[in-house]
Length: 96
Length: 96
DNA sequence: GTAATATATGAACAATTGCTCATATATTCA
DNA sequence: TGAATATATGAGCAATTGTTCATATATTAC
Image 1 (cartoon, chains in turn red, brown, purple, orange):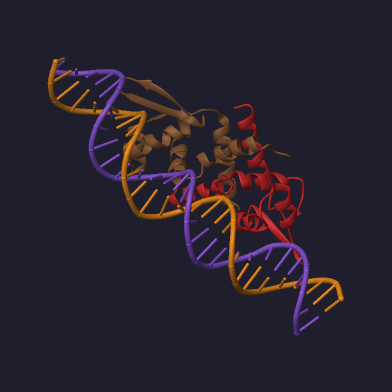
Image 2 (cartoon, each protein chain N blue to C red):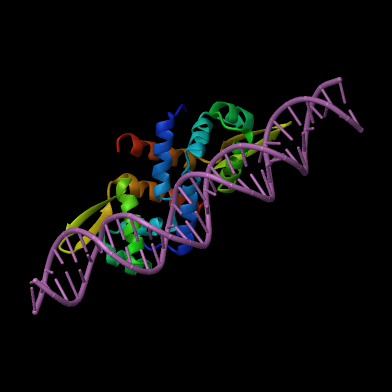
């Protein structure tokens, strides 16, 4: 399959977004529905700053979406490609 | 979804294997069938050393498989999870 | 207005990554 | 045997990454 350099870079960037255990754990929590930054931080035992930094990257890759409500920002998975990629990857890890 | 730390790390490692443009381009060539290291190097305009280093990582993640024939080593995708992950990612990039 | 809360962001630093270069190993051919 | 070819590997280095810490912005309550 021929792939332009641009597509290769974009594809690599997409997978990079899922290439860190902290981000994978964020995504796994968001599989069950939207969560605020502080709830994610609490659930993952990470600082809010670290979570926020990671969410920024996930947002820029359009893997998560933000919804502001008062002082809180609720994050959710952006589209179903994300959960499909996640599930397919998990399959590979489990019976790989 | 609850995810153990180990699974999160393994999943991140899997996506890490696809998180670099050079590796994505290697995978894209292997989508069409097996290729030797030097053919990959030529097709990608990379040194054989660089390709070999990357193939090692892909091999360790069980994304590619090696078949030795004489002096050459032919690489191919290890299982169909790989091409499915690749195609799903490409989908996201294209109509994302 | 001020204080408190929730999130975002920039700088800095350690750790990791992907390459090059040199060298090693393995195979074929003369 | 020795030279040539194909691949693998280790060291070293620049570039990138993920975190912490300090600070900024935005919203709510008083």
